[in-house]
Length: 337
Image (tube, rainbow, N blue to C red; front, side, top):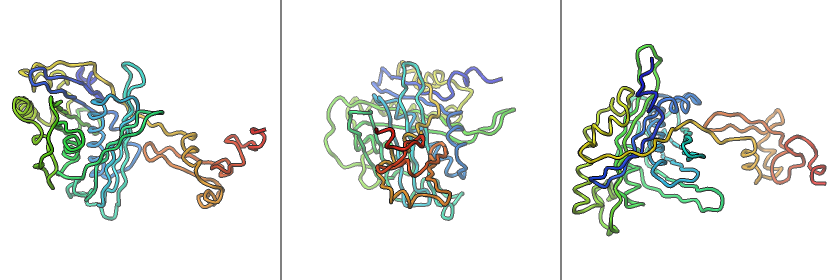
């Protein structure tokens, strides 16, 4: 029998406010959505762990923003693990689910299963991209990879680019419950304080002089922030991952003295937006000559979605800005006439 707490809180982000300390936050727990993301691929365990971590970060960050469409996180490095990429799509309707997809690129020949996962990304950067949809300009912010974990990089991004003190406490791994198959689970808490006044430029205490969350606040704000962080540091791994502890119970256990207030939870699901039409659009910039170089021995152009593994096959004569056929195979002149 599945515990009630698991039914209620798996694949969910719960927004909250700590009224005493003026800190906002999110608690997230991912279960089935991680399985849906990872089953699309056959990643080694060290890569799966990083994908789980960045998917959890994406769920927490995506829910904090006034997002109309898409948030993307992308990690690029020079090590064996070259790319980690996620997309978070805001709910399309009130009370509807948000959607997440993720993938990774790595060099199997250089990968070390027993080495520190973050260290195998190597020198690189974390990019945060926000696309609010048609008629708006996309936003992109970047921060160097530093601090020993993806969550530390995200904290640095908010301190450097947004000047918002931000903390993450994450846990993820394979979980085995009685009578059930082993599966990935992840859980995390995000805290964020909105400073009441602009922050003067200063030297950061992080790696390479980067700002950290502790460098930003002063006075009463600093006291409130420190107190909330001390409480966050008491959380245990199994409390985060669950499933036996519900998110509201965990919130009360951690922050009862800070007067927590919760908002409507947001369900999270796996979702990919790829389609044949989108692939056609991405190939519309190529000439017939370019497409001949992409054509297989079977006389087709193929494309695979990195996120969900969907495989698309096209007649090259229907592609590009010099296409002579419509997608249905009919002569283009007939449709144009």
